[in-house]
Length: 283
Ligand SMILES: [Zn+2]
Image 1 (spheres, rainbow, N blue to C red):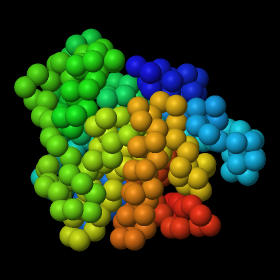
Image 2 (image 1 turned 90 degrees about the vertical axis):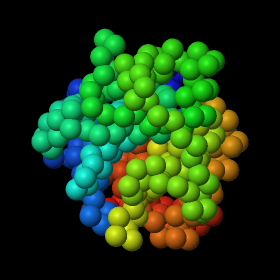
Image 3 (image 1 turned 60 degrees about the horizontal axis):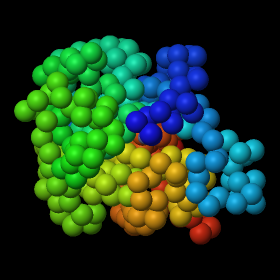
């Protein structure tokens, strides 16, 4: 629960402290699909989780040492399927779904980017599946790592109520032509933050959106300085390498991105700036 606890500490203090209902849901069209950002939690992250950030860089980019962060999930609504990507802590997620008129038992699939508590805790409560009709999909590497080593007993408990409805896959390589997991949704490997951390490329009618999970936690600092990783990356060096690769890829291919810890609307386009990158938010 390292990550989940950490975020609990960082952001939990502001949970329920309230933010306007009109800025915790954002909708974004990808061809014939509607993708919704569902903000569950927002607050200030602490700079001491950023590895190797010196005082000068912190002063330049860090606006006094704190940076905004959120916990978001994404809902993909298409004509034939409703898919949730991550479940956050499972708190205001359910209010947001209600606002959208989406009942939890209408969700066909839950995709999990990785097994940290702030991504899987909405899957179950008291051993009961909160998405009773859904299949749960995650990378085989991710399931194997967290359940075999028992590093995070909460991860196994989150999957247990889904039994045989948990399906694992092997994510494809960025830039190759990986196989779709579900119509219009392709998993892509971005190992580093965790051993099976997965991005999901959403595609419809030639339009794309890359939901990039936890490729970035502190956007204020990691867009300009993508080499900075966080203490809760399983492999911080690998996380930095994959972050740069993905940033270059989305810039080169002009693909919009969405992230679980980006700031509302947590969707936008990346461009190069100085020796790093910047995000232009969707409107
Ligand atoms: Zn996270």
